[in-house]
Length: 607
Image (cartoon, rainbow, N blue to C red; front, side, top):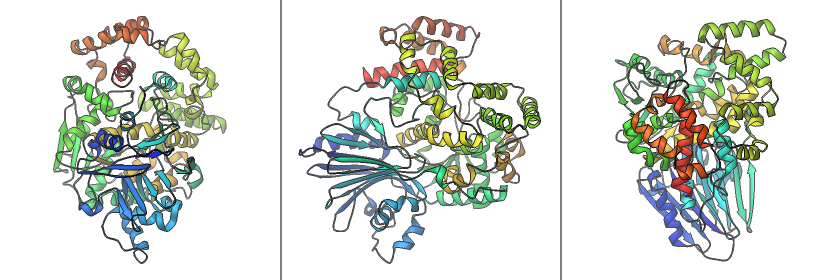
């Protein structure tokens, strides 16, 4: 796990050593255990190392092979590197016990097809001196980041935008379409653009090559095509998840777990104890106090006496205010909720105990964990004329959750896409009309995320267009403090057999994740296994933003000249809505945060 960066000159100029060193230094937090650069003529590669597997200097990067013809910089983990190494050992002489060397020789053996061999998370770049070719690739689901920028003279890449920004010859400009989609739909990372105009991300499951000054982009993995042999029972699912966890426990440093008290992380905790005898695993939980939004202490406490190394972190509004500038800097792009601060706080504390953390990311996306998936499911029942079941499922949902949210979601998904967008715009009501009218027509979010005809199609679209922003936030938080985050629920073998399995294994009788709940009935407390609510790592931001210290910051922003002059958010409407929030007439904490976050991002990265 590391940070990678590089420069490839597209003209005849030599690379600036100052620039590559500056790029490496800007992502030093990703690799506190070492760094290195390769530089020759028009190519430079940089690396910062977080040592996880093979802690010796033999595994340092950039990594060289075959008389130094090939140079590799790699960020991530190939979990099945031992199995691949066994295939390669008769052809290559290995000098390390690292997955880095396995990746290198896999590329030499199988070329661009090597990625299909890998079970892991990765982004990497390999330079072939003889062919003067740069090959860059990214993992199936986008767990590990890869950003790039190209102009007439050079191609830049890095694990984080800030590294590219550090050597740009011009002031960065914002991408206003990203800003619109963020404010209206609360979506980011649904395509290859970023909030910085001109800085793009290599899409997940894709690679690019640079040769003869030409850049070619190509997709190497397509989940829709690879999905097959769907699970037909809970035991199959359990065994696949168990194998995923087993691979992700491979490490030469301590492994911990983020434990929220929710179904997904509790499943991992239960399996670590029951299948791997790891009741001593370090777990880290964010808590806020009884009756506070986001606090799950009563569920986390069910593991007391079973887990011996439980750590509790207490994110406070005072801490958020203290960390606010560094927090914004760590994420580098706007994000939709302060719930991400809970993860930030956990990583900040955890790096004193562990260097690897397991988490439950990805379960919601393939097991229909978000409640708006009920709307997709109801749409399927409606179109299949299963109207009696549709009525029963609506009744079950209402009895379970005392809410009509699922029915409202169903109605929303039946509307034309243009009307869906207009409803979202009118619902927010804070954007200037001129700004909204420009970007309303060009947003791709409704088609990508609200245009699904079936539940399984919706899940597939979440993997294609939504999951990645969650993975980005997790990567930025963990790597800010030199921690590698691993996702057992995102093993491609698990996803390929889950994504199109029968809907009854996802939603049934008003409950989500039915196959998982069945699979873990003997290892997770029933209070958690049969939970009806869904919280995750949230913060009580609604109350935080009513505090006097937060009011001071929020009022300053809403009344500032910079906020008023951006031409995006109408300050008069925002002021009225914030006052209603203070008066407890409404709860719009997430909208308030988006206004604040966007303005602070402008001030730090654009202004």
